[in-house]
Length: 75
Image (cartoon, rainbow, N blue to C red; front, top):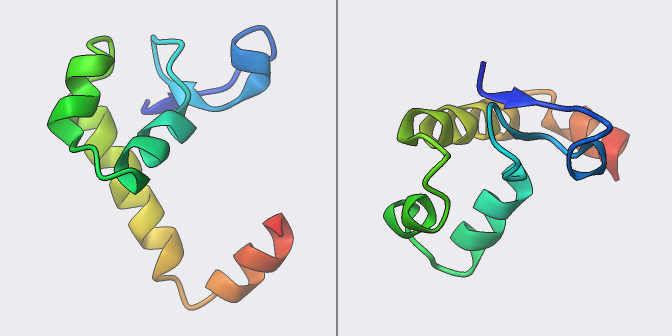
């Protein structure tokens, strides 16, 4: 399992499984131009396979032919 949510951990934000690191933190790092290697150095409890898996999920969502419906649902 890549992600978990628990109302008692990070106010229920999705976090990398077995960590308290919010997934949002990964995307913030990437947006700022910080490499995956640097992210993993900053958050050693996160595994590279988790990062790659989350990016793969995001790619599938963003390339889905239903992305407009997904965007509407979260906007």
